[in-house]
Image (cartoon, rainbow, N blue to C red; front, top):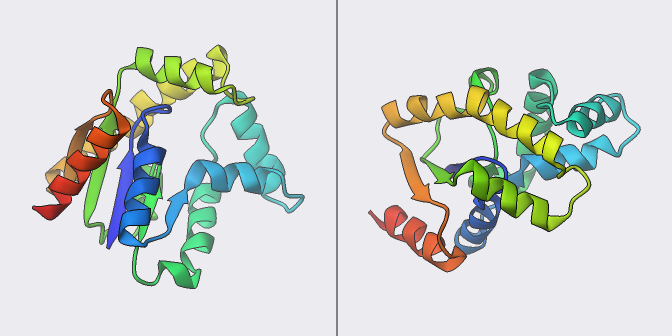
Amino acid sequence: MKFIFLGSQGSGKSTQAKLLAERLKLPCIEMGQLFRDKSKSANQDGPDIKRALDVGNLVPDSLAIKTLHERLLRPDCNKGYILDGYPRNYAQLEGLDKDIDRVFYVKVSDRESSRRLLSRGRADDNLDVLTRRLNIYHKETEPLLGYFREQGILEEIDGERPVELIAEDIAKRLAK
């Protein structure tokens, strides 16, 4: 089983991805956390990833694809996985295994996304960075929704509801 969770920053996609991962006993691969962890390392990729994150840019596609492929080689991914926030654009989609069972798009307004992110207090969650990240999301990630819709695997989820209701909605859709 392979699932993707997409949505703007602050949509709750990570929360829902983790809940489903626990339920299905699959690894949840949160790209943002992989990038934050790798940005702290002194290896050759760390500084490039850190620079991109610090200004709100996407991690360069080649590094994103490499980071994901390294993670998918771990044995815990043999029976499937849940991708949180990946792919972010068509280039990353091209480097992805096309055997995806379902894509959950957790939809929230930009206003709600900003409200949630500014309240969590992470260092990279300031208004300038958030605005830049949302603009990139609308320009580069949202177009992927059409691709997944054409594949018949896209599930649009109202992300402006309580966490429990969203999780129930996802469970019902998986039972179909």
